[in-house]
Amino acid sequence: MLDTTTRTIFTEDHAIFRDSVRKLFSRALIPHLDEHERDGVVGRDFWLQCGVAGLLCPTVDPAFGGPGLDFTYNVIVQEELSYAGSHAGLAIQNDITADYIQAYGSQAQKQRYLPRMVGGECITAIAMTEPSAGSDLKAIRTVARRDGDDFIINGSKIYITNGHNADLVVLAAKTDPARGAAGMSLFLVEADTPGFVRGRKLDKIGQRSGDTAELFFQDMRVPADSLLGAENAAFGYLVTQLAQERLSVAVAAQAAAQRAFDEALAFTRQRPAFGKRVLDFQNTRFVLAGLKTELQVGWAHLDWAIARHVAGKLDAQAASAAKLWHTELQGRVVDAALQLHGGAGYMNEYMIARLYRDARVTRIYGGTSEIMKEVIGRAL
Image 1 (cartoon, one colour):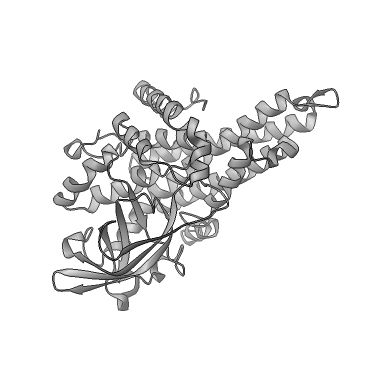
Image 2: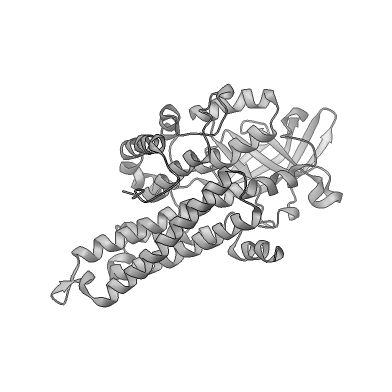
């Protein structure tokens, strides 16, 4: 269990909410982790149970069926999910798409989608990355051409979390390609729209329980009121929302790193070697002591960043620094924790093997570590 007794940003209300998250996960998620890994997807039934339990879209306004809470409740869901070792795409819905729709959507769009997102009946994805455009969003090639009262969209997206489950996709496309980044728009696209084609469920090194797909748009016609926000305003929206997305990745990374440490400590406490426990060797204790220290620093920094974000003061550089530091920490901790397992750590039956596989991509998605350094460096 994730120890939160020394955290400073949570109240008794948070503790009650966290307890409800843990109870649902212990019943509906954790017993099915291996099944989710095997199937490459977390079933819709789990999403519906999360909706009933109030775990989806905590920040959505009560006018649209949400509880109207702040981002700290999103954090609790993400921490518990990551610590459990699952990659169900709840954070896409909670931390990204719900905020896009709430911030930029029309009243009709909010009424149409947000209540169903809160309830788990509508699963969402955000489609930005393309085969030739990852961190450089200005390079996307998907084009939306106006045709009377409609737009006709052609293009493709790749590495899309929730891609196979999604009922609704927030889609980035060029509406004025000649203007580069200033000619990009967002659309709300329902998955049953003619011309919307799901490609492969992608075969990944890790995070296998996460539904990740490629999507294609072939002469897909959508009405002009599918625009999310203003035409050609998407790049500004993306920049504004990236701070929360990157903080969300940092939250998950820190919780997963803590789980890796806890797994290593438990293993070395009971594993014998040369007539004593592995934990009794000075090297083992020193490695664990170093990791514990880094994790302690990590939790303090993460709580600072969360509090700053809730107060509306987390800028792009601080969010990028959080994403950079916590994902790099995750990589160091899972590597050391696997080493302390010895040969057992390389066996898929041990949780540490899954944590090790799953960690590698966090230094890539949401902006690579190199891009994070570039964002920070430009502000120097």
